Length: 435
Length: 81
Picture 1 (cartoon, one colour):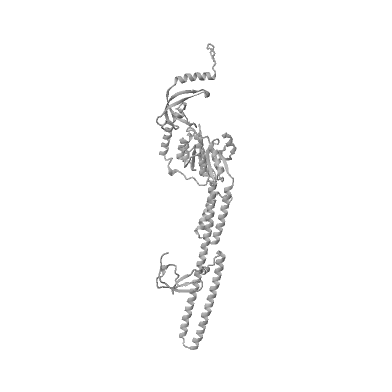
Picture 2 (cartoon, one colour):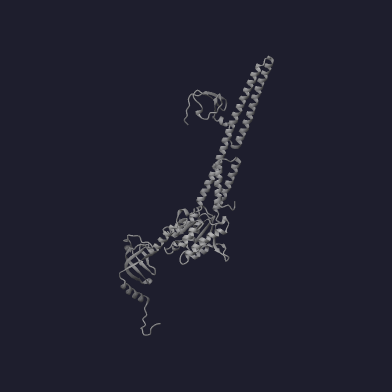
């Protein structure tokens, strides 16, 4: 109701603003104000714009570069301060602000104090204990995400997904991440993802979840400092990666989470490996596969060479036994008296010895040929060629023991070396145990 | 192989290399393992280049059962502006 008695005075916006400016600036030319810093902004020019607040009001302030450079401590959100300055009206915006000329810290801010108190409480209960932290799976197939559908976080994560490994299934539980009800929605979403796991087969279960949001003021991130959210993270059976704000933002949720990612993009990078890395891993495995096979084949080759040596030596041994047996038979026969009989037997013995030698030689040739062919077929390596390449086998003479180490011999011993063609008998002059 | 997860395929491939490196196989077995390994590595490499991805939104229906609905990525973009 406009009073009829009062003269009707109509101000323009500029006039009324000018009037307020005159009154206010005169009333508060120099004041001390106590409050908590919040939403500190730094302009490109270096001016600081912190808001001062208490439980029921907010006061915009400006600290110009010239004043700011003299402040010794670091201005941070949540810090309680006392400012000295003057109130100024800024007509183009119809706003007023405190132009700060001096600023002093005053103990810890109340929000920060509340944060500190919750931190101490949860720490005592063991919510941050490293033993409780679950490992983050490598290359999970199903990933849960708790965040807002409208924020930067989900966009950032999908961007990472698009340029990294795409063979994944993401299950998103959308929530409000700030304001009234945010903490309860976040806590419920974490529980829901856990219950979802109970309702599906093992192969479809969520293996890891990311809980977070993009950057914002301390107040915007506050839901992640709430007890309900912290407890839901602690009670989650699914490993939780927290991804709240930027690198510098630490919340209590970060302390409870199984893994703290600096940002949502980093969280996505942690669970989604780079395609290039996987390609590298794969090609390394294929290289290993190839070398394992060729190693296997060369070990087969070695076995074959070894077998043929042993066969060769075995036949040689057999041959000598038979000669010895014939010698002793001859000896026995020579003891028999009738000269004719003796002569006849002698002839037969000579004959037998000859035949035996021929037959064994023949068997030897057949076996050698068969193994040469087998070796050539399997590995392209003819084992007997080893000798033709200049290798030899050394035996102790006359015992036929194969010499593998110099310690088996001493000076004065006699050795027999089998070469590709023929043998040589040598006497040991000196033993050198090196190598 | 079609339904084998990438991670499982890699693990299987690692096991094959390990088996081969132990050298306790016959030549036939070794060649068979090698062949199997090569096939696995081909499948993995195809999987790496595939553009398949799936993003679902979790919700509860009236009965209280969980439901998955595909996310329309355009929704995200529009709301942000």
